[in-house]
Image 1 (tube, one colour):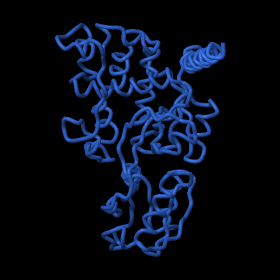
Image 2 (cartoon, rainbow, N blue to C red; image 1 turned 30 degrees about the vertical axis):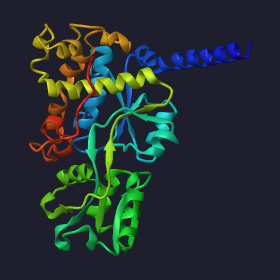
Image 3 (cartoon, helix red, strand yellow; image 1 turned 45 degrees about the horizontal axis):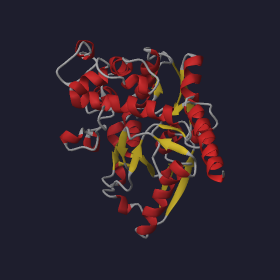
Image 4 (cartoon, one colour; image 1 turned 180 degrees about the vertical axis):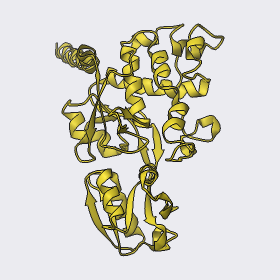
Length: 338
């Protein structure tokens, strides 16, 4: 009898978890739009244009999710979040997903009860200085004043790096990237530190970018990616595999320009499964068969998104580096669609 009762309790827990797992997708569909937490403004990654339309590398992940669900990438409400309030906004349910240059760490994944569903940018922390300081290395920064965003992994990384190298510094706390840029330009600090991608984005919009340099040291691992709440496994699967679809599309040669033609059927069964002409992958995550096709058609594959917003042909000027496809010496690849 005791064993039967235990099994019954486990079954009830399982049923409750299954119901919870469907909650976000059902709420998004009922609302008619995705609510995506993003940056308050970071050039190339997430920022409103002159018409107030959000654009950027991270924004396109939000658009892809909306396109996968609704077939319409415009069905997104963007909620700007700071480094201090972003996880609270997600945990409280004010946003459905956080796509905001957030680092996947042990404590965030466990103690904050969040799920990082992938890495859309492999990054690391760096330092930016004025060229006229005549500094060539971060190991020359002893005694510097350093602008740093509060509530970020960069605070601890900075403390660790200076302690390891026997140096001291004076922190100048800032709440947002915009404030950090302003304080650094105003001379309130000698150094600005954040992820290297963020430094490149900030420098690109300075009126005199050639007067600044990013030092060569990268002092941390910063795997950045989309985040969802614990206990919402179906929603996590949907966000994870929508992003994976963009990565796989690049590897398979699927682009926004040819996705329509390829969706008519090919000799490659993985392309067919991904684009919904074979199998039932969409149904497994509560979506229509053409979910991945819709996402790719809306924003392009991962490589297209990278090149459009932050690549070497943009003012941000980032090389693919670790974010190249695994076939090109990078870390970027998706598990198989099968």
